[in-house]
Length: 268
Image (spheres, rainbow, N blue to C red):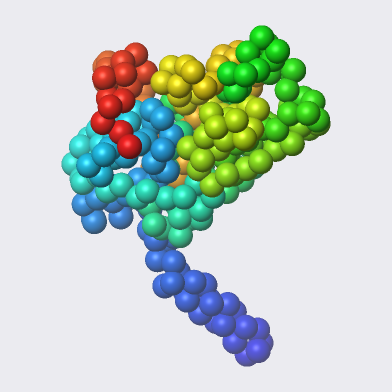
């Protein structure tokens, strides 16, 4: 009986040690946000027009404006946490940020690791082809051929879609979307697989080097991600999304970034 009690106490000590190391896990996110006075938001700058960096070092974009408005609604400071995409979920899980507001598609695999708020925007994958292929490649389906080399960004749904829909083609993956799309613009790859909003804007700015095949071949709902087992924060996010959509704030921010390109000259 004493041995059983000793084992139980050892187990409790271990749990306590874990919580002392990862204290954020024991405290609901909303409590910590309000007590610290800041909302820490993870994203990866470079995803046009969701999150970008200006020439003078500021973060701007659709997601950034929503995150700033959310922080003001909570009466706390917005703290940006620019994070490499392949490490963004671990950053959330280890408490480096409170929420991912970074154009993250809701997938079953990600949902096993994080909780997603309701979809805040829907997108799909499209392809940019090198201008030299105009007329030869008229549909994304044409790219499933061993003679083509495709590019995309590591850890994105674009990379997953490329593997799924173009298994016969060669796929090269890069750390950033900017590096990946540059392969096509420079003629080192035939096509770039990525999200429609990014591709549409890139094509409008690089008409001489790429052509946008703008038929989406996937359906991707994007959601804000938080740590598991936090129903209070999830409830706040879902109700906040309903409110900004009903009162017009969402449409105002959307129009600023998706229906205008007045901001383009300010980004890097």
